[in-house]
Amino acid sequence: MVAADDDAPSYALRLGIQKDQVVQELGWDEDSDDDIRADIEDACGSELLDEDADEVIDVVLLWWRDDDGDLVDRLMDAITPLADDGVIWVVTPKTGKPGHVQPAEIAESAPTAGLMQTSSANLGGWIASRLVQPKSKAAGRH
Image (cartoon, rainbow, N blue to C red; front, side):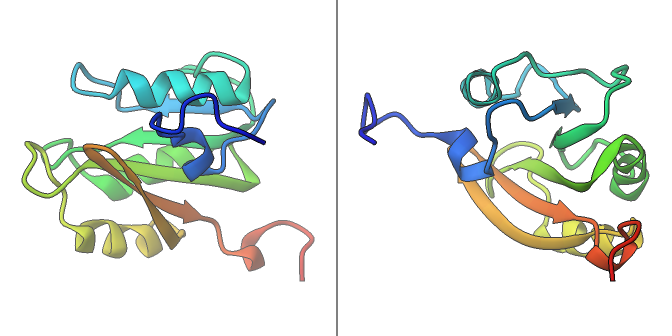
C-alpha cells in the first residue's frame, strides 16, 4: 500500500482506528486539532459522535487539558458506553503547550477509573495516551 502523500501524518493509523468503528469525541474545544478529527472520520467512515450518542462505542477520543476538571470522573463517564474491547485515547497538549497535562495525572487516574494505560501516540501538537479496560473485567472472559 502506498500513501498518497508521504508527508501527511496518518493520525488514525497511529490510533489504530479502523473502518466502521464507532468513534465518540469528548472534550472538543476550539483548540482541538481539526486535522486529527478529519483523519479519524476518514478512517472510520463516519462522523465522530458527541457525548449524547446512544451507541456502543469502539473508540473514545477524549481531548483533555490541565484545567478541564477531574480526569477520573471524565474517564468513568467515558467507560459507560464503551465496548468491552473498546479503547479510550486521552489526547492532551504536548509539553510546553497551553493546557499541558502531566503524564503522571493520566497514569494515576487510569487505574482509579478501572483502566490500564498501554501506549501513547504522537499527534503533532498533541500526545495521546491509550487506555483500555483490563481483560479480566470483560464479561465471560477468563
